[in-house]
Image 1 (cartoon, rainbow, N blue to C red):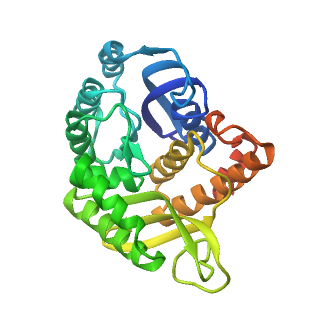
Image 2 (cartoon, rainbow, N blue to C red):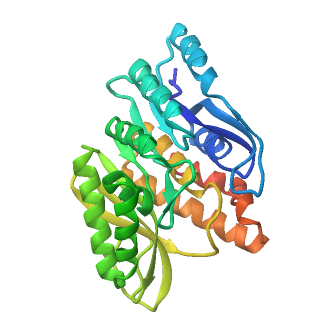
Image 3 (cartoon, helix red, strand yellow):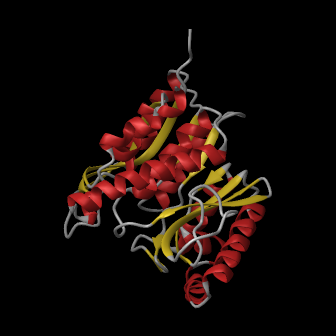
Length: 307
């Protein structure tokens, strides 16, 4: 009898926008892992649209946890993403205390900002709770803004982000590597993955690692991995703009892969290939960024590792 591994996915459920639970559940499921959702809120659509309806689910989270505890629920993985406020963060910290076991893989996507700015939900209190969550994780997947917020807070993040933009390509990558190493060391992480780094490459970078650098200028999208003291990059050509849910899709691939004991390098490469194809399709379709990426037809890419 084959045991089907389970991941508790603690996220909001947005009807439109292909993010959070609607992104995580199909990805985790197609990779052969059961996604067990704990909704933090139910939204008509994700918050990037001009308007939305939101039913905050914080008050119900403890009741769900109580029922799961009665049934002896023991997840192999716990994956957290967007949190609306400090109270939700406290609920998740309680979830970790109640359900995390010695071998549970905990992945935290510390959603707090992007492109050098903090989101409207950001408070120093939320950052403090997020820091506690990160300390409880083995793996985190911040973007550069969130990595700096975790290390320095909002004011210092803004200064350092601006300074990084002023650096030339290679020097900028070197500084981001130092940020990744500082994150991993300060929070005692197995791995810190800094996602979505734009980079104009004077010489071509191989899609997998930064070690091979030859060919013409091109815009690349890179992901830095700092794992157990080792540093490497995974790049792919950048197409289109920024789309809803790409970070959720990326983190979902990592969460399921790590629970299945795949290597971090394999997980990141798989996520990058999957997203690259989905984004290219989305650009061709002319899809609005708020609607998310056309990933459905490429879910089969995530099965290939099994064959």
